[in-house]
Image (cartoon, rainbow, N blue to C red; front, top):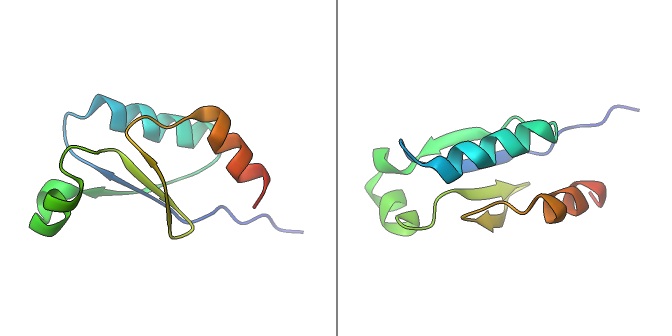
Length: 79
């Protein structure tokens, strides 16, 4: 049986310490997120300006700001 890693996207921006922490935490749980710089797209910047990181897993927004490791582990265990 092959386990497929969920599609993971992190909306981020340069210099965001919480974003760096989120990416490292996701990696520790075996996820390889696609990083999207919100400052490269005015509509994303307007949508997520003060909320980064924003983490989507399997097409659903799961976290804004700090990623809760306990909730992440539960989410991944119940996929």
